[in-house]
Image (cartoon, rainbow, N blue to C red; front, side):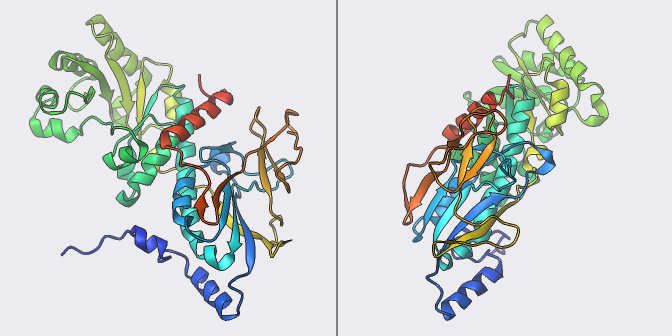
Length: 398
């Protein structure tokens, strides 16, 4: 039998095997001292958003809910997919999740819970920023090969929620409720000996429902290979340029040149997809070219994680906190006009935006009551649509 892979399974996560050991020690001490039933309120906040990004996308809540469901706790949170800022104008951290219950019942899950939102929120934020840079053009997520395969589903879901139009793994696509997207690796052309042989084999063997998009930069000049692909595949939908940096030169000019050759040869409906080391900045350099879409991998999958933390802010109904944190159960507010954040001690406060003067809305929602779901699960497609709508509100998308 092969040795076990270095990845925790669901049972190990649920039983706390992956937690930081000091949480288990804390639980044992509280139980031994008769304090296991002490009621507390814990809030999850974000200390700062990396790269001086002005906002972030909250992602990963559904997995947290699945982890915590059934525990004797109440859980409130801002909706997954919310675009937020880490602090209000008074530098108070905005609570994105509030948990009420005996600390011994939920504290041991802190490590897993934070991991379920820190990385996904970073990936979703990077995905949203790339989608903004693409000015609404198609973006495919191709970053799974850069990360451990055990988190492929998490990565793909986060990319999709952040705005990517498609993901590359079947596992992730199933989670997102979509079809996996992708062409073929250069290895197919190299193994078969020519672009033409690979193009024709793809068209012959792969299900006709799969869009015919051919990778054209393996052997030949891109414009010649693009026309050859059109002649090899009857219903060609597009060509993908994965031109290496050593051959790229002015990528925008290369894309436009390929577009010209396609048009002049009668293939105006064949689209151009660009890939290969793209990120938010390089996409901005070529977005106004004839490119129709982008395949983006490492720059999204390797996004910096968000610095979420969980802190106790109330014990037995009284405000309490560690130094450097604001005590008391708090509620998150957001301006519907500019997305500035607010914090209040009640869910019905009148909070005005310091930036534009609009009345802020309380955006926290009940999620679990006594461990039971209060509302139905939202699909990744529904969450993604809410993210794109918020981006349009921010006027980041064309």
